[in-house]
Amino acid sequence: MPSYMAPNQDIQFVLHEVLKVAQNDTPGYDELDAEFTSAVLEEAGKLASEVLAPLNTVGDTEGCTLENGIVRTPTGFKAAFDKMREGGWTALDCDADYGGQGMPYVLNTAVGELFVSANMAFNMYQGLTHGAYTAIHAHGSDAQKTTYLEKLATCEWTGTMNLTEPHCGTDLGLLRTKAEAQDDGSYKITGQKIFISAGDHDLADNIIHLVLAKAPGGGEGTRGISLFIVPKFMVNDDGSLGDRNAVSVGKIEEKMGIHGNSTCVLDYDGATGYLLGDLHKGMRAMFTMMNEARLGVGLQGYAQAEAAYQNAVAYARDRLQGRDVTGAKNPDGPADPLIVHPDVRRMLLDQKSFVEGARAFTYWGAYLIDEAHRKNDAAALGLVSLLTPVIKGFLTDKGFDATIQAQQVYGGHGYIEEWGMSQFARDARIAMIYEGANGVQALDLVGRKLAQDGGKHVMAFFDLVKSFIKENEGDAALKADFLDPLKAASKDLQTAGMFFMQNGMKDPNAALAGSSDFMHLFGHVCLGLMWARSAKAARAALDAGTGDAAFYETKLLTGRYYMARQLPATRMHLARIESGAEPVMALDADRF
Image (tube, rainbow, N blue to C red; front, side, top):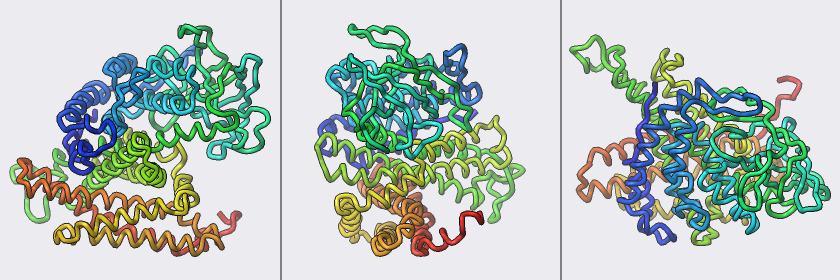
């Protein structure tokens, strides 16, 4: 069975030496000193490794069951969920006025990584609840906040998001679920939703569904969509639970992975719902939830890669196969360990350099969200909006690739279920699809985010990269190994952006055909920036005479690997973009 240990030293490095959170003036960050975050991460790490990780295989093999309309989660999930609730982990960054602890989002993100790496399917129950909490907190009436928020923060009740229907996924303008206004101000919701993660279960007393539906008078397409709160059990005026609402589970979906999470078909048969936010403005309210979810899904991509990598390293150290071509490294044994072979080292370094760069990138995104919300910083909000599709799309694409590489390290054993490596790949695969498939993320990036607010956010990103390079170019070692590669990659990104500007208006397909390549090009530049910042921090620690030189030297070597072996992919992506639409669109549809 695979194991997992929280990489807390790496997390502390990003928080305190790369992002320097305790030195930031964002409200709440003054509490994030290294001693405090260390204590939080240590306790979260124990829960992750000792309670959640052992249930990961259990959830995968048992899955969820539907019996007489009741969904049962795998053995041990309920007790583990109670431990998570009792520890206050579900409410870490929730509003103190509604039972939360009020910590910054960046700390919640770091803790969330540990839980996702340990047991992604399990963590989705509270993760989706957090999204529902956020949407109601942002758009709910005072009465709705009073009714729902505290119970959602503590996960006494859990939450879901209901978008997809059998005939529509990305194109939500096609949805058919109807909302009929009632005299008492409520609505009757009728329709069917599919792919609803954590749609029903036995972990909480109630489930609060956020449901997109069309009310009369809203017009066609997404303009007619509203968002409704539809509880599984009705809530009485005193907060107690009443009758079962007219929402039922049609079936549990049979999936490739995340078996421990109950992905349901939900049937609404005149269920009572309450408008959340403004009528016919449901997409705005839902996207409050979706944008948070997309950063969380990007985290899932690299967090699964982290867990898979840990096990692949352990296997590569122990498994004896062949001899080192430069001379035996285990002369007393029948063979050398796998890790001596250059191609195995390549696979492991691909994984390691990606995971550590992705962690810094995701925490930076969470840091920007804190700046946007806690300081009302419009520039931070614009920048993180630009980066969100990159975080979601690039990190899940590359995270899945990393789990496949980890499986490959095992050779044939990686294909055998008892070693557990296939679960990481199967679970990671969904992250490329849900919360907006990665092709859609790329289209959003190129079609909307680049030009948003006159393009000032992408220009701010380029200025940020240029400023970092200029401020540090006096460091010769940093310049050669990190700044020069970053500069070249950033130039490729700017050239790609200019190609879209020059060709996109006259031939929109020229931009759309290169959108996924642009998202990956952008992602590599972001990880290059993160590695350059990490290298600067590591060199500062070494220059100061740190007591753990090996840790910082390893950071430098891992970062140098990324800059030399991964970052040059920007040239390939640029060449593909500059080939335009013709190679993609030349083949007629009937010739496929």
